[in-house]
Length: 72
Image (cartoon, rainbow, N blue to C red; front, side, top):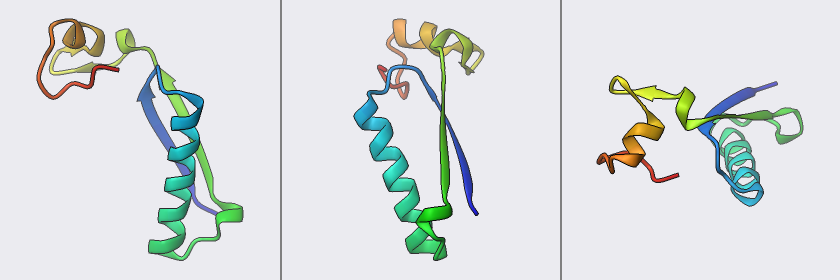
């Protein structure tokens, strides 16, 4: 029974989350032969002000237009 926990910054649409869940489930089924019926995927959204990278929050990096940081 696989359990996958995905952490992303907030802002993903319901459709994007559904695509992530479907894609992760399909990947585990295809690569590891895991049963989709027993595969659990949980998405945790973290505010950009609470996620840090390179010594700055993601909110700060986005505001500064830092390269390699997604805009949402």
